[in-house]
Image 1: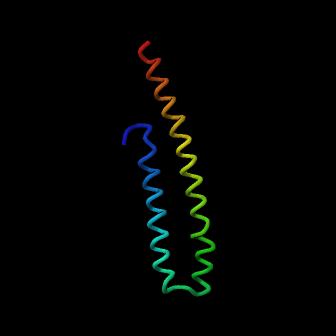
Image 2 (image 1 turned 90 degrees about the vertical axis):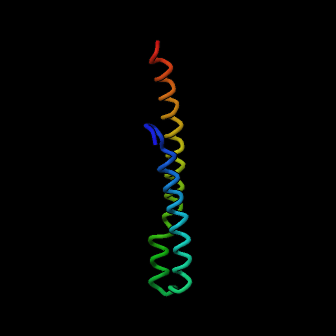
Length: 78
């Protein structure tokens, strides 16, 4: 990972969410009482939109950062 590389962290975050959701599905096969439903509602459900929003923001920021690095290197030699 080099300076300005945000994709590695974003990829790890996306993979972690995917793994969490898979593990939750496995757990939910045997744990499906009131506490399970409350846990899902309070902790699992909010994660997906939050992580997706974060990944979109990181993507936009990565574009801006990349452009800034490119612009700085273009003017650095002048």
